[in-house]
Image (cartoon, rainbow, N blue to C red; front, top):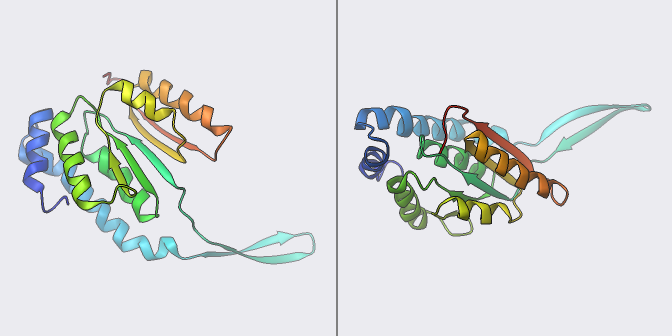
Length: 186
């Protein structure tokens, strides 16, 4: 998807952020290509069951850990790294067997449109869904039950995401990954 539509991605980054093609490639596409290559190289090892010895009062016990997917992952991406932080979390999440629901920033509409258009071409809806909209759409999404939430953005919005995710902690096994960018406000 990234390689087949490289020019569409670069044009969207140029329209949204004013990035020249070289900068768009180096800061967004190239980073994603490296992440995909890394996931491809290590995937078999990541999926191998872990075998450990656990010390018990009566001796050692052999333990085998099987890896399982978490389930439904919500990704809320920022405007200033609109492609990279929309796709980067999806790489690991999809490799681990999770489904991803992406809410790209409304402040990067060209990238959001390409993400939505190509998402439907390359993924089944139960694998990846992209929904566009403003903060009110994100608020609605945050009311839904997610197994994991990945967010990068401002402290103000991060506090809202954190509150919503914390409400879910009582009901589900939810982990929160917040990446706050203190200088950047939407």
